[in-house]
Image 1: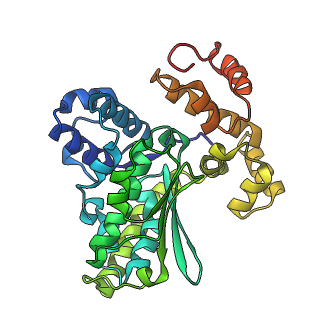
Image 2: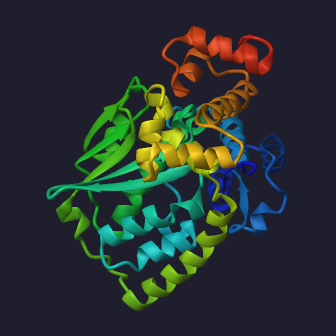
Length: 334
């Protein structure tokens, strides 16, 4: 079964396009560089390739010299700008239910990103897991964390401060803007992106709560998710998605992937075999595809790509590049 590239709701690119245009960048030029459709403005709930969103980010970064770009882009949208998912969150009973719906229906917003909730008696951690190519750009993850915190404040009507924010990005020269935005402890260079809330925060009611309307929006969201899931129901796709979260933390292994998918290693191997593939082949193809995407931009250091793809030594990455691209990484990625 052929692998299909991840897609996302056009609302994400539209937010970034709107911000870029406000700061003097040309709309048609950005569309051309990203490969986004010309009618995207009139189809906010259409789906576009995540690859186009990545190219849009790079085009905007090249045109706007702003180390706080992710934070600044995310300061403008509100929960309603997330469309169906945002409205389902707005009419939830409390912050916990709203964030649970975000995690449950995230695939509608983007198939290249996943939110998970991990709870204890005292706290709830919302973790952002994404395609490694998104992690190669600091602004999408920082923007997502900003949008998440601001959404919690909007939903509750309270100027909340999380317990902690984790960012897998290098520490900035001046962290003042981050401290002003999040108003909590921030850990840069962490393994994952995450926001930690207290259970007291999670139990806060949402003023717009409407159980009947939220249930109706749940049904609409389930309908919206069905075709996305049916387009990506192969074991190859499931393994690729599971690999995204593991690659930056070192070479993933088949046992962890099988555990994440809730199946045995033997079942995983059998189902991949039925699709004409294997675990090593899926891993190799994913690394190849991400490498090609990053190298086309010509400005990503090879050491960074090597880390994002889970190689323990840059030399192993260079050998793989010779095999994939018939040449080692050259100018612009050294």
